[in-house]
Length: 401
Image (cartoon, rainbow, N blue to C red; front, side, top):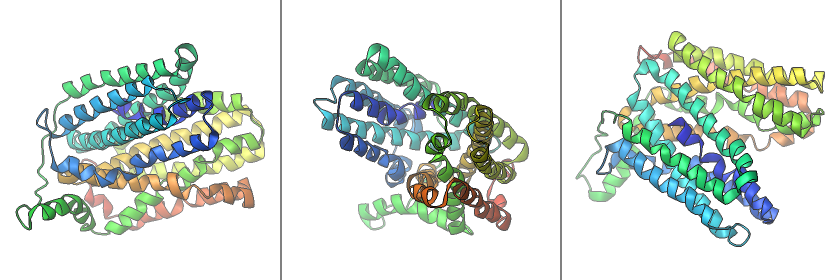
């Protein structure tokens, strides 16, 4: 399921950008493709509907999943029927549909993972999910670019659609989680009241928890430094003298395996340490790994140290991601899994989408050392909140703590 979630992401990102560039679409038009990621940030707006309404086939989770995967497969394959050189607007509209269906698929799979896995397996299961997600992204981006050179972009999109279509077999074979009723009020003010309850009840339920606003702030801050630093690593590598091929081979290809290893290691350690303690230790490792870029800045153009710093950073990021996704899943009420997890994951993405944007201004005015020191220190508030609100551990089940 993680693979199915990761595959469509870059089909509307780097692969589509490459296709439009080869078709001589103007650069300013290609720049607007960034807006295609909006459904991933706004998915919390329609996620509650997937908690409240069930299709008449396969159950609430698998019914929605098979429906969305059918639509997603059709959209990916239909984009291959057009040409960006003559129909760029139509290509963009279909790509927007792909993003919309892909974000909806993410909502359903996140909810399925929370409802299906026992509490003690949330960390390990989240690790496997992220692992599959990364493999799907790699196939769509790296694999898609290689395929496009041999068979063309249109055949590549047809191939990717067919690969995603095979993921429906997993949906058909997977067991349906036990349904937990959302218990929304009915017949109290008519359909308007029911619609209001559908969207408001998941938020109200979450905000009733002790320190709920502090929890939301923690989710915003936990990976803040890591996200802001990661947004500018490529210009940083080029600034200290690495070539495009060195960055591609060392950071993108070699660096993927430490990331996947960190996800696996994090998942297994969470089973032993529990989610709360894993958040603390993995967050500390993330902070130290961010400081590694300061060391690399002073060492300069050294492939050995580039590989070392990237490996340590990716291992730490993988472990932290496994713990963080498990923590968010454990916080959700199973009556409102889709709505609450979509809200939390949208908040988690804000540093990458919004807060990281002015990072270039910081780096250009203060220099790389000061920039990475700021990113390193930015991890401290999240760790302090973990120490301050130790009662958050009691919100987790005894098996997940």
